[in-house]
Image (cartoon, rainbow, N blue to C red; front, side, top):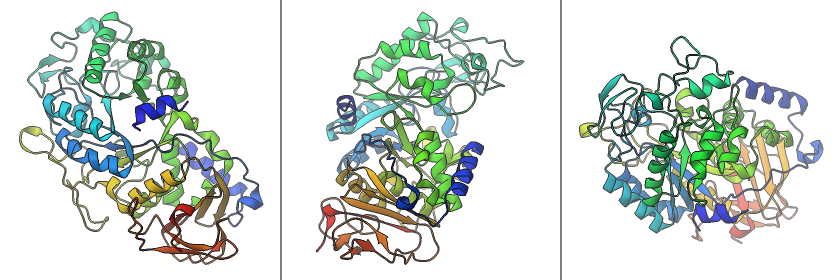
Length: 493
């Protein structure tokens, strides 16, 4: 079942302070039964797992979609498809100059073929929709030849279609606690569209509907917090009911993600990703075993959990490929937990903020996934984290334990574990040495396959790493910097 059908029918400083306070309140060597962690994370649509294929061109996504489907990934988030300013930086695709579909990621025909291929494989396409603004440059020629000025786009928008906030010296946002500035002034000098104008609403709706007509299932609304929520709702309400809407609302200032959930289906939970960074990078992973943690996030049913995205890996507020082992373990933990709709992230290595692997004519190179050690990527190599065996195996763990709640939380210094009902168990060890204490899994005795570190793939009966559950339900001897994930569905003996 694709994401759209399944979803529609299924009915910083503050974070660092939170972690410190939680850690201080609960001794490191106490487990769930000692501290009374009876609250559970609300179960969400865990089997609806997505992936952001950041700056993958359309032909490369087309070639990948069957593998995504075979892996169990339900939806793919693409980079923005519209024509954009010229330049060799990745962020040029976030500065539209027209709503044509010839861009550095491919042609209109390649985009259409990609959507058709993914849909045929059962993978929904979520297009990144840049509808808050147009370009920031004073004038120029777009990727497909469109001549434009900052407030003039032939056949599309003219000066009156943009905000002129006059609230700051340069019309740019200077105070994110001022709602009027956030919504009506320019973000980083980008010409800010006035979504209150009927003409602007009509042009945006026409663009979004054209993508839907090509088979796109929904949209990531870029910079959603910089648009008036009632005006954004007017645009989105004009689209068919089955369209999936995912909002990017970065927390902070006067506007928060919760204020936009009524205009869409889901929003990215940045606090989840930032907390995972703090848990793993600092070694405070045991702090994750706290019922109050979930109250800090959006409701599970309206959230997207993630470990990294294209912005956060560059501002280093979350984990990234630079910390491959921690990134791998955090991704496994996200897939083992029940929070939200998990989104994987697949990217390329870079040594410069602006860099994107380009070929002739400023077009993005075809993706060639790199093999070899995860800590030796050179700038410009495609990492393809979603293909890592640990990740594909943990997707299967997620499916096998789909509706089982998190219970019996285990915490110790650099240790975090929990059962998934009476059907499975997950634990991560961030210590530099093995963890030799007995761990109660609640599972029957037997030899189980470790999803995380075996070569097991999906329905294969082969298993290269096994975990022995003793007669009393305990396991011992968890190696350093690894995880164990076991379930009744993978008992070997």
